[in-house]
Length: 69
Image (tube, rainbow, N blue to C red; front, side, top):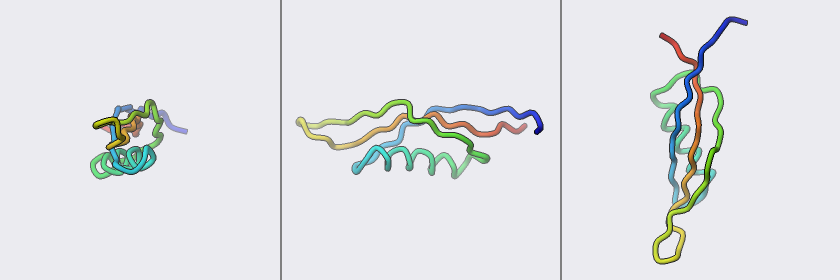
């Protein structure tokens, strides 16, 4: 196994339907410009409220990818 370096970034995905969809959107969007995605870790889940009602789900995601020069 060769030595590797990985970078970790933090993203926040949003969805009107679920936390899972919010996380999926964050990862899929990042995957459009980043290569070699490795691990995604859900850090926090929260809700956006308006007039006491849930209007959006938010997922904070730490995402790692292999760093290449």
